[in-house]
Image (cartoon, rainbow, N blue to C red):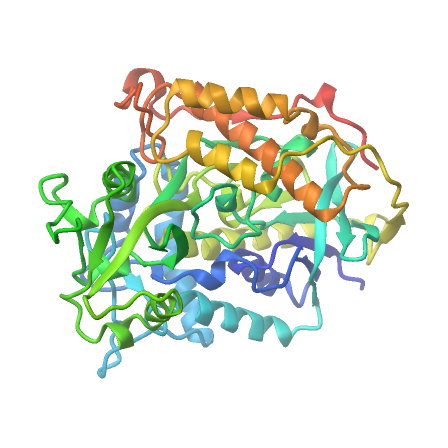
Length: 524
């Protein structure tokens, strides 16, 4: 029997988890707009959070996740995350994925911000992402059912009869291709590279969010973007990320004189939730004062954190003084394409997993190292759902390896601002601290640039760079509207004009962004 096709857009951890789960029963095609290592999963340093120790429990992990998320989380999804996470992670370990252990074979569990227990499994010290991705790619390479197409940019989702039926891609030579499949999975990551300072790969600009919106899928919680407190900076430029695990092992945030900056701010001090630490450091940045991570308490720093040591070395940062200059930067989008706990979006045939998805597990502020666990749990659940749905497809409905060429016709391209200008405007208004004046100014500027037009424009005749900038404008416009609408501060969404949570008006309420069906263009 012919196997049904599944298309996955993106090549990070969530994409590979789903692909490996589907292999053997379905044909899987993975499309990446650049090379397969141009994704955030390779950059993950801290590790993966799971209650694997006998002095911990899924309930404790559940409580910490809700507290960090300011109770905006979907409680049912969080329960699935922490319970299934342990079981699914143990299966991975049994299949060959290894994590750091001591001489007795016990896991070397790390501590990170807002966790009440040591529960972070890591590999190669601070090289967890690299090790996990290598493991997943090695596994995928053994399967003839998985094909990976690099430098093939997804431009649009195909919609037919109210269902997602595949994608349109553009190759490096400008060739336009359509690919049909019964199931399409968005695994395109978040949108950190909309900002000037970010921990993300430069390719992560919200493509999946823009494509899903144009196809009519619902989006949610776009105002909740997490800023990591400790990006490594040198001469005003971001060199990389200093994992929260450094503070978990005793490093202290200090001012230029060496005085601790988190003392008296929060009971957890340097391990307070990320939104709180980021706002404190941002206050110093606004005063043009440098904040440092004092790593003096950490023995054998070079051996314990080899990747971070190399980032500092490559950036010309001497660690003789045991200080790393840090500053906040865009890190992780808690919102995204609205899904259920099986990754299903509101558009039949379309799934979303990883940072692209709004599963509800992170609430208003992600608990450190829950992202890799989310990718594992919900990507496997999405694949399992697809396998069940595939059983319902009749032989007459099978679309096997269907693709088609589209004519690469040129079309009028509106004047687009530069990538640098877009990032500058977004950084000023959608940063760590926001207010009505800045948000309205950004919204007005985006309107002037035709942001809403980009929800309807036929971009198949545009070059790759213009397609990306179009997606940047549309994604930023959707985020700005949500941030303006939520008139409170909650987690990573902090407004100086509404500095406190409004439990009565906003507790548990989502802001949904969705293109109205009657306004959708016909795509076939």
